[in-house]
Image (cartoon, rainbow, N blue to C red; front, side, top):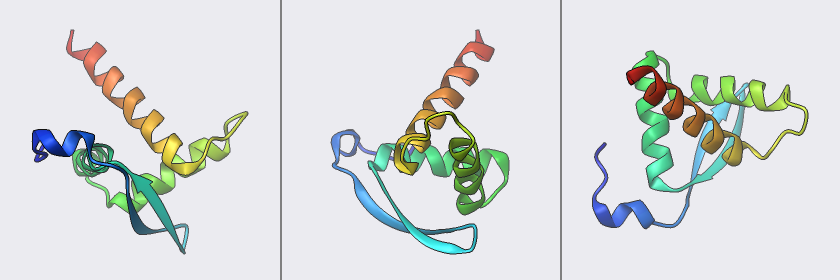
Length: 87
């Protein structure tokens, strides 16, 4: 992770991304943005493709959260899954 200690508590930043053929904006803290970039890199997919996959999963859920919340939850789930597998 390339973040400095001060960046961990940086407020959210709005970024534009194209998913499912349309522009949208996502407001995430730099820590979550970096985790998302790392997850896309680990999977060998562009970030917009990973966000599109997360978007489909969130829309299929019983009570879909907003996209930024879905990304944060997906990242936490992904990290916990990797943490459990590492034990």
